[in-house]
Length: 301
Picture 1 (cartoon, rainbow, N blue to C red):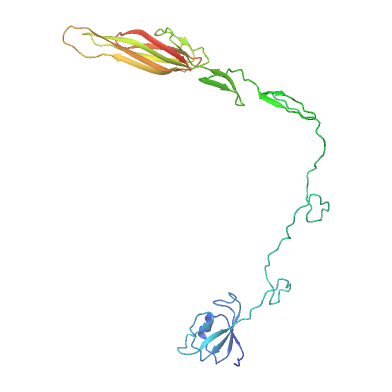
Picture 2: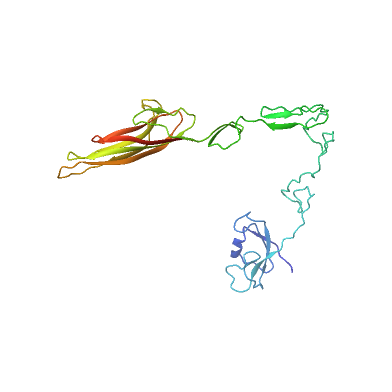
């Protein structure tokens, strides 16, 4: 096939507007705009009826039958890694940098230019151990020092707390128990509206019962309450805390002369912190009920 002199057109898109003579060449400088792809070489075949694919076959818009632009295959070249001329067809652009081969480092290598040289090595001194000594404030040490051969024994010092079961313990910053407290139960004599102090280093769980007698007459009923309280001072003016309260009373109306006395036992229970002042306080909510201390129990916890 004899090809005729080539003509230039801007892009493959413009080739749809060209119809040349059979076997005439055309050079495209891009696909839809100049430079958007590498230049390509085409020839016109008046007998071709190949299907237009926009890539290797183009059918001009004015051609209804045969006649196609056919792309001439561009030669492929095998790239040469060692090609240094950027104008050569086998030149490889943007080659990655390949690092030097990995090798094992040599501790004894003294040549700093050698690839197996280790930089900034620590200095390792040599010597002879003549004695090993162990000392501790938490352990009883025996067998120390060892100068040739022997055994060093370390036994944990006793903490001063006897073996046993405790309701509360004190632990130092090393996790060693240094003190222990046990529960103790007592039934002390307590009086209403009297101030007491928990002088123990332990909290107290107090439980107190009081009889509240309320009389109901034609004049009306009575009501009374008791309170378990503690505070920082004996006048109960600083950080007053009401632990628990209990109330008994009666109200109503009657049409005949009658006197009714109702007695109920009220209980108050709660924890009284170590060092606090506490009391069982009564209060006349209505009338003048009678308060009688019944029982008290205190447990150090």
